[in-house]
Length: 148
Image (cartoon, rainbow, N blue to C red; front, side):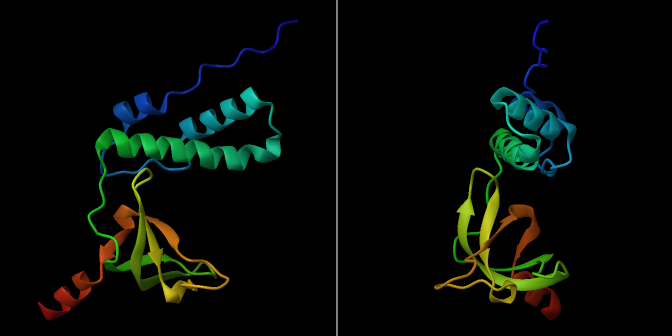
């Protein structure tokens, strides 16, 4: 009996070109992400418990293709003061202030430092959180609204 044949690997570039817009980042729950992860596991002969890791890797590849295809660029610069609504350590939605300490151009994310999220500049502990460009806004934006 022949080995089972795999479907062709889904092409992230083709998917991005046909089914995405610059305003909407591809989500982790897309079927193509699952298919890419399953294909990668099957090619390597990986264990099923590695599927979650492969899904994250597949999503990273899809997001990188989205950023490249649509020419997604950061609107804010390194060192900018920002505000962001995110989950804290207890998974509560909170709005925090922070600073951009790095930019991931490949995946369209800022590396955000915020003491409110437990980040530290030195010593043990997390240094930043990677947050998509579209979820970060300048800190001055809120002050300008209050003044108006």
